[in-house]
Picture 1 (tube, rainbow, N blue to C red):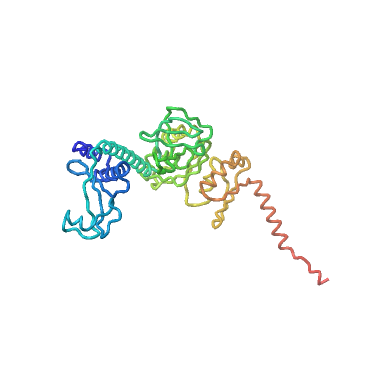
Picture 2: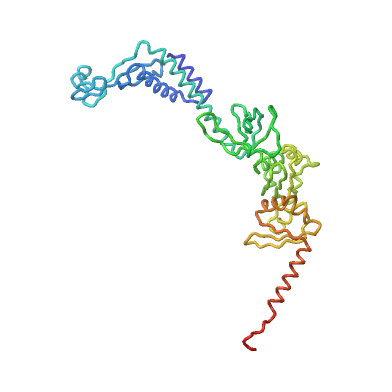
Length: 367
């Protein structure tokens, strides 16, 4: 090792951000292990790399004792004082014991340590980069599919799209570009594991934020998202500026903004609803495209009974209850949907029960 080696370490520090001192300390520790493995496992020693010249030296270390029991690790006070009169008991005496043929082992060991530290540094850099991007969108290229897991290339690393995070019926072809939502970034002994999703509601939220300038600027706020990936979604939006239409902003000129998102999600239908602080109005809007006649709310229980025209009942409920289910997720309210004719029957029954309650029942004891 020489000054060229030190220059190379300084270049690595600039390029990879790995401290030269940390590298040298790691190399010294590795060289000590190599020395003990090859030349004296029972001998105390230390390795020093000269920070100016790059030269290394191995020193044996022996403790000064009154009576020597192991000459490989101990030295008598008398012998120590013959080397240096200033030595006292319990001091450490060092002698250079650098083997003549240690250079080749040292060079190989240093190379292994540097390569290992470079890999660790690169893994840490990648981890830090993507750990800070959790809950964000990434764009990558489908690299391969193994055991139904889709691996997406992200430059220096790759992300995993597991079966549970894949959209129903979606096909993933090698070389195709894809957007996904970063759910979690895990540290591992190898490369960081980046878990992404195509089904997470956050993907829809981030797609709208990328597509709609008013959302980026904070003029329009996305209040809630409800999603059944690959089929249908609902979002609730609100404008901080009364002159800005939140729904129109998200739809875009000629519907282009929302259409771009629909295309990215392979035709997933998206309902955009205006958020309202009034629960009854928000619940009514959430059942769009169905028309609502009236809403009764029980705020403490967060329960709403929605009345719709008879011909709108199936539309309000949706196929297999999907529209009602999404509306409940969006509003975080339990929604009970009734048609007008059903409500007439309920009101009649309530009137009848009320009349029965008011009827005086004769007391048999007076007979």
